[in-house]
Image (cartoon, rainbow, N blue to C red; front, side, top):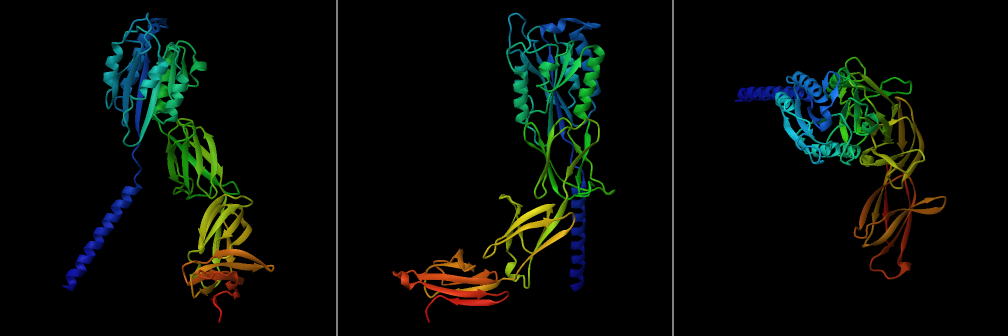
Length: 465
């Protein structure tokens, strides 16, 4: 029987090891890439019939976009959709509601968009703002991680009194879309569309084709970056701290990472979306920040921040049993904001500089101008406390005071219900004042002075012998 139990134990340990290995392997795998969803908004207003270069604008746009779509049919993690405006109603009269999602988002639907594109006939006006507004509903709810991109292809400006800039910024603020791309055909509309998104001027067929390629490349290709957390020597040695990338425009959280050094001892490479301007917060104590970070698509970027750090270690002299739950408020020197509440017998990392400490003992201890230096540990040690056992025969009202420079300073109100309390106190001179609940005369008050020494217990009896 013992042998059977022995073998069963071995089998259970092996199974646990296999399970732990499988979980570790799963945790080590890179997360799946986000789903990229591109919505083409295509101008099919009457002006697209105009002659341009070798053909009409509509024919050139149809051919070049079809070629581009054909090249996307085998791209993984990509979904496309196709919205058209100005193709349903003749102008005049002007119909500013003339916009329609002709091909909804789906996988492998390049051919559907190409077929729809071939049959388009320019007829109407140019409701760009309304089309962008309607595009918000074109993107289905994203279950995991999605990049929603709009590519607007137009040969003209807004003709229906709408404000494309305001609509685009609203959609970006809500996190519905990333900053749109705009390709302007035949004329430079940069001044009008810079506030809408990233503008590309297609002043010729060649430039149109080049703009399409650049836009698709930026929309699909990953961009790498590394965050260098610099020590006081300007070297990227600091690491193992959380950092958050925020969308500079919408304020939304985009990425959370724990900063890591790779196996070559350099900051690890991050793959992040180049279509967003970022604000970076590194969650050191206190945090360090860098705003308005712009990445160049397709290029490796180095993001450097000064983050030199050292340590504060809190300890108590003698036996530590009485300070296991003792805490200390840490503030930057001369400031009132709490940076951290640190436990004693704990070491914590801080940005180099000077700090003011407030030890939450009785009485409070204030230790100012604690200097934290690069990669060194500053130890802050307080005296070992003692214990005061306060005995009351009856319930009542009382307070505890520390005596400093012959002045009484309040530090604690006694419990009105308890008849015995044990208080952990720093070494020093104390006075307690007490009156029983049932007493109706102030002269019945009792005051007792006592002294606390490190590591000792003092009994304080609040009654007359």
